[in-house]
Image (cartoon, rainbow, N blue to C red; front, top):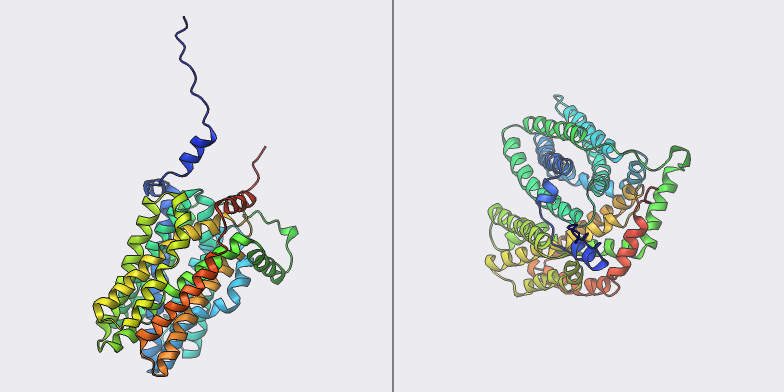
Length: 432
């Protein structure tokens, strides 16, 4: 008799499907040195972006005493998404994504340093602030594209959930630190801001591997033509189009409690403390729900839950029609935060279904829609409140409208097979 042990049977399709559908672990992301370094650098850069908004607003206010100019200095950070961001996405695809991230961080560090020049004229400040804001869309597009290169499969969904949580935490830290430092001296806040961007850029350079762009120089066309190509891909690809619209609709609803917190606080007869509490509860529940949903729910179940859970945000917003006291408002804010847990799998699907070399322009276009949908929803609610309608009723009606929005989005939601086909089509060819 032979003592040789039988060879294990090769893994069949069922075994491979089971492995692909297992619940991921955070250690699979943090255990990857490149991914961990990327996430740490992103946290620094994002905190810098938030701190910058507060510090610049304080600097302009101190220099002019004008509420309008101070508000404009804050709002101008969203202006590049009105067209410039899409063009920058096409530029991003021409270069290595890591290089774009490093250049964006270092360029912002230099621009912020210019704001430290004493007695800088306000118009020059505004121009510099706009230049800093214009770099952000390119950084965001390159960041998403880089993450999709570092991690694949469901590890990407976990990493996106972590980046979202990191972004929320960095936003809170950045706003708090910016407020505290700006109260002492806006220039000190800006100096810290510049250092954060510089350290982030150096960290990306040292910890993230260089991957050249797949787009060849001799095949380039005019940047506007390439921008249009990206918009057409987003429009014509069912998975990319539907998932992008789903993300826009989700954030147009879930951003409302945080965005109108100041109005809701005034309606309750409270002040800044209540406003901060509403915003903090929204952010905290968003972080926890996103991490739990991504870590403990299997990928296949997550996909099936997207349709029913898409109506969670409208349910909570509609409850505002009851004109609840503060405790009820916090429940609405918490519900909106929980509803954003769908963001991670939706964004992962989007990133996986974009071919390499196209991610910059497609992600930039998708991010523009996201920013504009949030801004229009919050501005629209604020405008209606300005005409004398109490904020709870405006939010509640927006929740009712949200049911219609989510119905239109989810009725044509791509099947698991359509998403897998799109992923396969977007995947790079296997080398011989």
